[in-house]
Length: 385
Image (cartoon, rainbow, N blue to C red; front, side, top):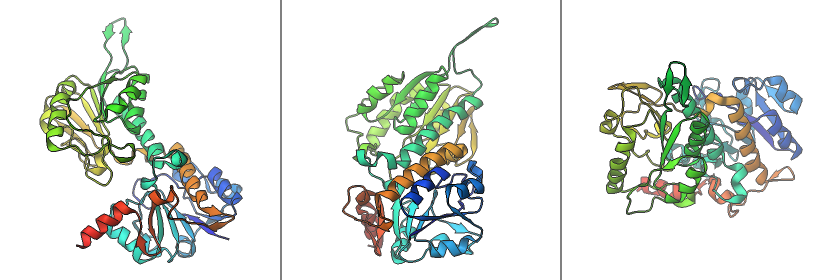
């Protein structure tokens, strides 16, 4: 019987857990044995007793289970772990399977996975195809990030979001500009509209205009001479000239905004700068920018990871890992995504990993001592050269 281990997350501030009592029941039904580290789910609202009642074994000495597990389920990338005394990647046994957000473009770690013959499936690389929708953790967590970014802005801006009519007079609604209409951006639009704000949206992919308008947002037309459509529905990086044209249009809209939510990211690359220092300086004092892309360098030139920056009266927030702030539901969704991916290649209690499978060909990062994801493998080869 294959042993699945769910450790407590070691990343500072990470409150999510990679399995929940409900997802564990599915794994047990598939013929897997599950061990959960003591208090692994406590920060997300799942007590040890709930895991035990679901059929998992709650264990106190994690080091032994890191070394013996056939499959390890994680939320965040592997790092240092004081309870192990070594880096987590070194604690895995050769041939083990690791599933989670693995930061697949961190090439030194990826090479180490291959050297140690660890089979890794990166949730960031799950292909955006119909068969894999239930496994799409990027989308499930990005939706939470977009929701929480708007709530964060609403608590920091000195203005009501909705139109308010009071005995003292009428207060006009807040104007919110969302940059990027991916999953996080669209959730931000929907949330801001529910709160009563007037919402404008900018995206370099004209195809998302209909989605924006269906949520009640106004789409900002950009005079681009190139397509912003990338592979798999993601945005691609614009040329310098394209970015300049985008910024020129956005400057006028940002100058009237009370809140700006930035969400634009390009897989494997630094986030594009959409809001320059000069553009921020043209905004109204008291305006708030929430930069969801802070962990990838930020879409605003003033953004600093997990810091509040005040520049000429404009507040720039650079929160990272917003989903961890709503750890309960974030864990429920992530655990469903992970369980769906795991059960895709577990047949009758045994591993059946087929690199040619349409889903696994995207998500599989390393296998049998090789970097098998084509995009990452090309980067590893280029780095060696």
